[in-house]
Image 1 (cartoon, rainbow, N blue to C red):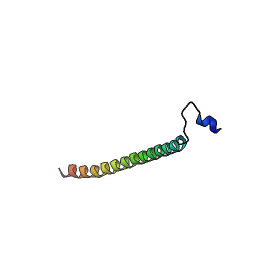
Image 2 (image 1 turned 30 degrees about the horizontal axis):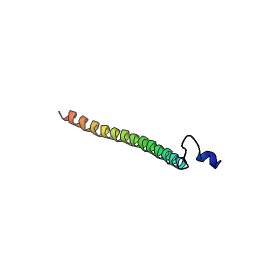
Image 3 (image 1 turned 60 degrees about the vertical axis):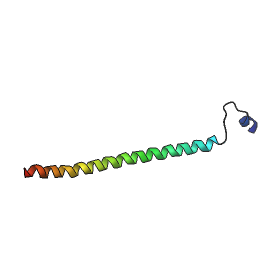
Image 4 (image 1 turned 90 degrees about the vertical axis):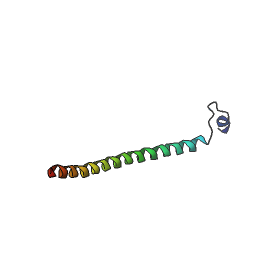
Length: 63
């Protein structure tokens, strides 16, 4: 088996397997962090819109 792996045409190296695992882990972490960031951004935008909605009602009522 080692002869086949050493003389393969595809240029496969044993370091490719750990590198692939690390790459998959990094991509998975990036996707999860990105999704959480978008959710947090949407929540903050909703909080800002609620805050400014209350302020504009107060200003309109004073006029």
